[in-house]
Amino acid sequence: MKAAIEGKALRLRSATCESLHFSAEQRITLLEGKNAMLVEFTITNHDRAPHKVAPWQNTRVRPKGITFYPSTEPTYPQSSLKLTPTNGISWYTHDPTTVKDNLKSYADGREGWMAEVDGDLLFVKVFADVPREAQAPEEGEIVIYVSNSGRFVEMEQQGAYTALLPGASLTWPVVFAVQRIPKNVEIRAESARLVELARQLAASVRQ
Image (cartoon, rainbow, N blue to C red; front, side, top):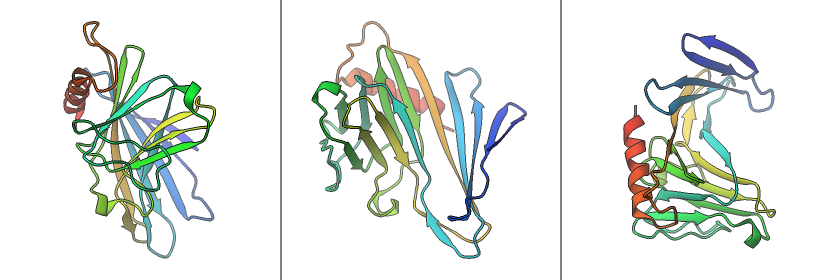
């Protein structure tokens, strides 16, 4: 891994994987005047043959939080963590005491964001919405993973499944944004006010 400062951005570059023939890069830039940063993920195909890939990014969050995202349908059949939307939003409230097995959900999101509540903080990841037909096989645009201890929790999203020719690259921008939840907002699953705040935050940082 090589790291460099380029203007106001931090650039992180990997070596080329000998078995996969891909390299990866992240370019991280703070968005001025906002509690947010832009993370641009780039994948490059160094092989002599074309390959199909989907960019993937996961964020580890603390247990006992609330994860939610817009969706109009239940999680996919291969999901061991089953979620069904309520009023167009899927919710997962983490409770480590109830988790006995590794759990994973796969879903088709809407609107291009997913959110996490930790205490009185609202964290939102913003990205391009990926229609179901453009998602990688056996994967999902939105993924939640919980280990059998209940203490290892990840909120994940994937970009479009894309064919890369030899020497070609794809770049996938994702924005991380955070804000304090106002004291008059009740923090609970199925809170319409939390959804409103997440949508407002996502809209404020879209590129």
